[in-house]
Length: 174
Image (cartoon, rainbow, N blue to C red):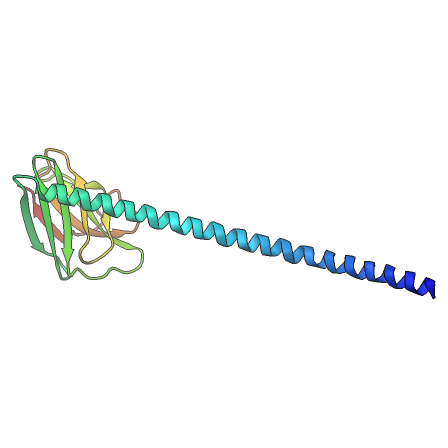
């Protein structure tokens, strides 16, 4: 009888050890899942914060530009519908542009801005000055002193190095 009690204790220890060993992968998987969830939350939080800071910086730049003495305004209907308005400060060599009721673009397309320095000059990209929202989006961009006009075109997302088609609007900056 004593041997059966000993055997029972050994069996209990073996069963307990087997259960613990089966629990290890579950525990490790739980830790990995929790770690990935925490990393995803942190990454999302940082992206939201960066976007918010970028939006606030753009709002301050727009407010500063719109408060500049000698601000010039140009508005033109856009081919395909809507209109484009540019606010240009010759003093700062900066402009803010906004679209009103522009058509929504398909996936992989964006509005891009170009400047011309004179008649017959090739359009040059106006920096990193694209916006994808068709309404109520203002972008502030620096221009060289000789900029004479501004063009808006529809380009592939990510920006183009050269104007790929006919501009939807051209606005004088003088």
